[in-house]
Each structure stands twice: as structure tokens, then as C-alpha cells.
Amino acid sequence: MPSAKYGHVVRRHCARPGCNAPATATFTFDTRDLTVWLDTPADGGARAGELCERHVRVLTPPQGWHLEDRRGALARAAKQLEATLDAHTPMLARAFQNAGAV
Ligand SMILES: [Zn+2]
Image (cartoon, rainbow, N blue to C red):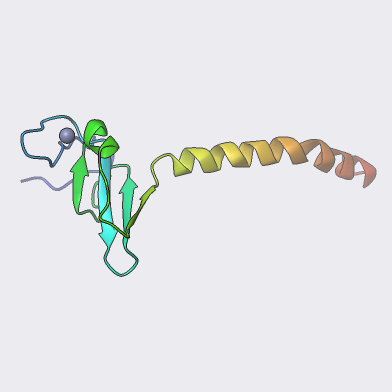
């Protein structure tokens, strides 16, 4: 049985009985924080199980728990950084020009 290699394509299936759809989310939970997290499936990542998109959409955490979908958080962070750089670059360029650095 070969061990997982880097670059290995993660292909898992939904954990719901009778569902063979490919998993699009991994869920983990913390019983102290009463939080369920959804993440992009990754090799070696801690997980309680995996769900397909359809079952993610119908997933309802127990009463008093909250659900945090962290999928796309990286993409959002990248977008935000891009916007920040866009907003600051002209200012930075002017600052360098004023300092005679450009
Ligand atoms: Zn499913």
C-alpha cells in the first residue's frame, strides 16, 4: 500500500449512507466550542467526515451549535489582499517618488 504522495488528487466520497457523490467538504467539530467547521478536503487533514455539496447544503448543526464554512476563506483573503494592494500601491509609489527612491 503506497503512502500518500504530494500532488496526489484527493478524491473522496460523501459519508452519507447511500450517497456516492464526490465529497466537496470535510467537516470537523469541537464539542467544547459547539462549532462545526467545513473545509476543503485535504490529505492528512483532521476530519470527522466528508460530505458532497448537496449534503453540505442540507447540513444543520445540533441546536446551540454554529457552523463555520471555511471553504473559500483563502480565496477571500487573496481577494482582500489584492484590493488592499490596489488601494495602497499608488500611495506607496508616490511615497517612493517623494523620497527620491524611484
Ligand atoms: Zn452526499
